Amino acid sequence: MLMVGPPGSGKSMLAQRLPSILPPLAPKELLEVSMIASVAGELGEGKLTDRRPFRAPHHSASMAAMVGGGLRARPGEVSLAHHGVLFLDELPEFTPQTLDALRQPLETGDCMIARANHRVTYPARIQLVAAMNPCRCGMSGEPGYRCLRGDRCRTEYQARISGPLLDRIDLRIEVPAVSASDLIRPDKAETSAAVAQRVARARAMQRERLERLGAGATTNAHCPPSIVEEIAKPDSAGLTLLKDASEKLGFSARAYHRVLKVARTLADLDASETVGRIHLAEAISYRMSAERMAQAA
View 1: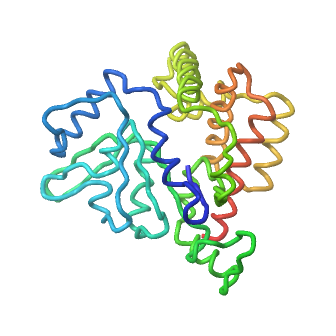
View 2 (view 1 turned 90 degrees about the vertical axis):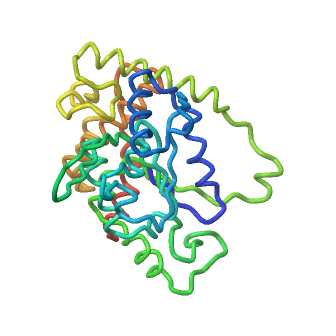
View 3 (view 1 turned 90 degrees about the horizontal axis):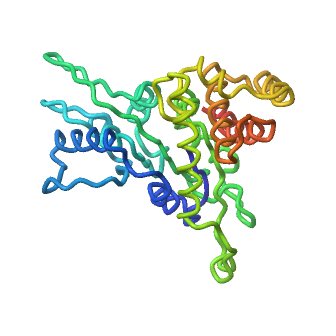
């Protein structure tokens, strides 16, 4: 997921709250996370927790710090976030080499470190959450603000993120600025506990469905394309919408299957057995923003 918005709009806060709505680690997941932390020397006093990892490296982190490396090939931030959240704030400020090194872990869920005398593979099945300003000055598109550099400022800043990496980001949302009146008179909102219950129910539905099919996965995100096409088959109206959107936006094969995965997950959150047009429309809307950024890249 990529959040785009001006400074102070709450992007970092939203990312930090994400682990609170995710289900606790299962025993097998807890063992894997603990083993990685032990190899990295970060298992403080042997304490274990079922809370999912949350890693937020600084944008000055090197490629070795991100994906792992060194003489003994220690795991990097992406592996330390296994079964959890990797949060990259100020995404365009990371070096292009560091960002593009994430392409393999995002695709395969593994991080392979090759050296002259050895090769090691660490698991890295993560949820990538990134945040960035819309432009270098941070206020592009905000009411009452006019950037002196115009559209060039926004285009050049967003072009720092490569198209192949953007193609692997399923959700791109705009986070508007928060005004003083929003803080003084906040609207009623759903609590984190209520959201966590919905997420747990949706994950239980996915796990049961995929176990019946023998997919070898527990969530929609990790399904192979053949299974995704079966469990996320849209109705006739949704199929027409998906076909039109694919042609107009030029979806890649990866983007096509990722839209289906997101739509299937949205249907699960609604406790719906079928994927409808409304679920596909929402999934496509998240992808449309990413396609606009890919054109800039």
